[in-house]
Image (cartoon, rainbow, N blue to C red; front, side, top):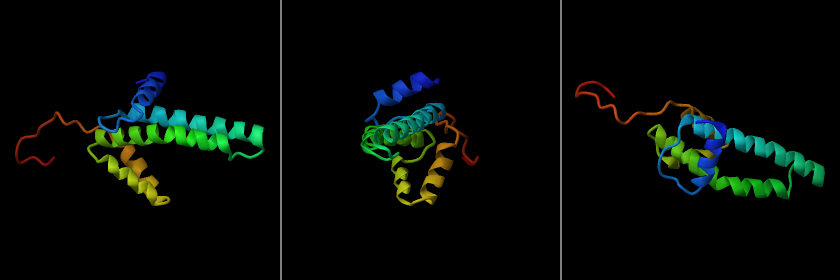
Length: 119
């Protein structure tokens, strides 16, 4: 999936926590939010003289639900629960663990192995 369709799809499904999101779609959306964070910080610095301000708060709140939703869908794509995002409560280690999970390849549920072969 390319950049623009990934962003449109993620924003259209901003409250849909079920389903799956591909690795490309997830990382394109994360890139979009990081670029948005940079622009908002620059705008805050120009307007208010500080990189932290009301614009950053609005951007964070506006993007919070879509970030959690696409993160949950990405975790579903690798066969994990969306509730794993609660690891973000742990300051650094939680984010590192989630980044490792988010980088895992898609788990293909359609492949059924014969009995006796480990899955």
